[in-house]
Image 1: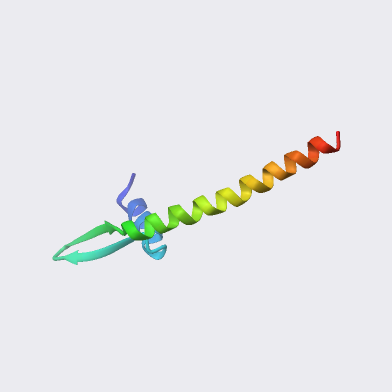
Image 2: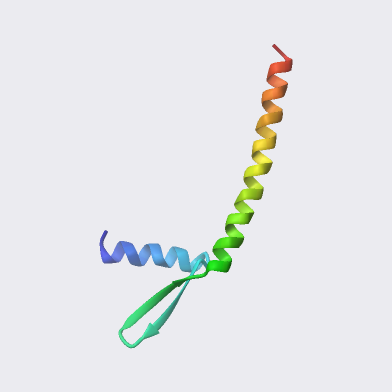
Length: 66
């Protein structure tokens, strides 16, 4: 992966507030925000549960109409 590609990926993660950058001299240190990642994971789990229940209900409806 090229350096430019890494920079683009880090920029996307930074906009999503999943990482923060800190300059140390000529270096830029990138650190993951564990709290935000955890929150995002929980949110995605909730969304997954909603969709799973909808798909389960959809399957029930299809089976009833056979």
